[in-house]
Image (cartoon, rainbow, N blue to C red; front, side):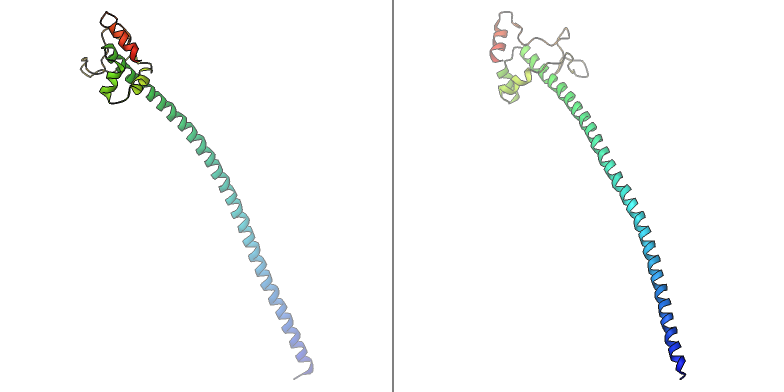
Length: 166
């Protein structure tokens, strides 16, 4: 072998190895840059998604609060109407001379329940049957619900028994 050739071959091998190392490092750096750019883009997408979810959560809370208030108002309106109809029925029975105790016995509940229901303001308009008969819910003649403490018999007995049980 030629004395200078071994040295030159070793030098070429070393240069070739450095060149390959630089190429591999450049490829790795390019891959890292590509990955970093993709990560920055995905973090931006994720941040936008998080903000949108927070916005939806706030929207949902507002809508539920609004709907909840609407439902509560509707429920209160329905309860008031039903209580008024129940109170009117009690007033009509009292107008026919029934005591709260008798009404409670007919209904199978305590007198306190009937007394509570009788305190609700009765409706001025009560439901009637479809054929307009004087069946359940019909208004007495004159269109007004009778006063539960009115003297039905004319001798004071009805108002005394009505006030004694209230």
